Image (cartoon, rainbow, N blue to C red):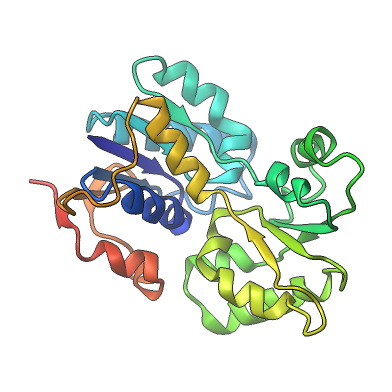
Length: 261
């Protein structure tokens, strides 16, 4: 079994780790776009063009499923990706976990990039899945970029700034950008109030990984032999993980995965 994941940068690490936990025997293809990152400031048309190229590079390795490990690319490029690749290659997008967060009933916040915060896309999800629940949209200026470059000082500053915009009565935070899952515990520490119950964080990685397996008719097998291989594509060229990936547990774990032969 072979599963591909795509993103402009290392935001796909969280979903990659989730796939690895569910199926350590899966061969992994990670398709990044260092030549075109970041995708966020690009126009929807330009972003879609970059995403299609990255997806085609991954598809050339004949995976059984392709995970779009990026919220922004899912918003703008998912229809084009599915038109190009499905039904031969199932494409799984990444959607903020607003529905499970709303099911908790308490007030929650959505941490997302400034471009996504307040967007019709996110507002539509809130309307569909969180009607009647108090929701605060928090723009996280510079956090995705800081995580991408493993800039610890910038991460701390961006997390602190977003935490200051998060109401004190919030009991749950939706991590609306895949990069944020890599610093989830730092976010928890910044938002948790000593007089409040433990903060609940909702990411998308686990659900996306499980959906990919369902789409190809596979079951989780976390006890399978950890003999899956790893292929890294950098704007279509075979290469290695960016050094910044090794700043995170999810990236370091991939060092143990052998290169595809």
